Length: 141
Image 1 (tube, one colour):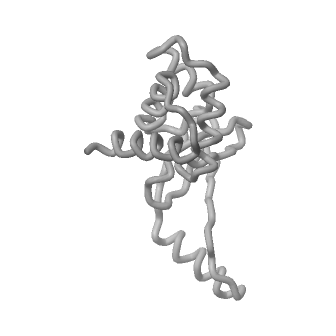
Image 2: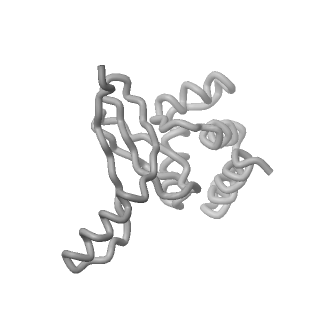
């Protein structure tokens, strides 16, 4: 089974566990979200879903995102552009670099950064439970 199909199935199970009926518009939203490789906001997800099924409503997109976020299936990010963006939470930990000119969100992982954060926390007498790192940058000319 592909990663996209696994994500769709997880989303479907999460909604079912929450007692939510899986309507056709919701299935479309789940498919769109499961196939997203970027960090779309609700409006982008809505536009993608409506292109597939015109009966999808923006309110259904918002309700579905809220339910999936509450169940831990997706993560909400609030980058500096003011829009809530979403990504699947089934991947490994990673950090983000946001291109200030294009708005592109680039995922990356650095063992050096992870070690340095753990060292700093330990020096201060702490263990890291979770963290996020967002770098805001412009491409060099």
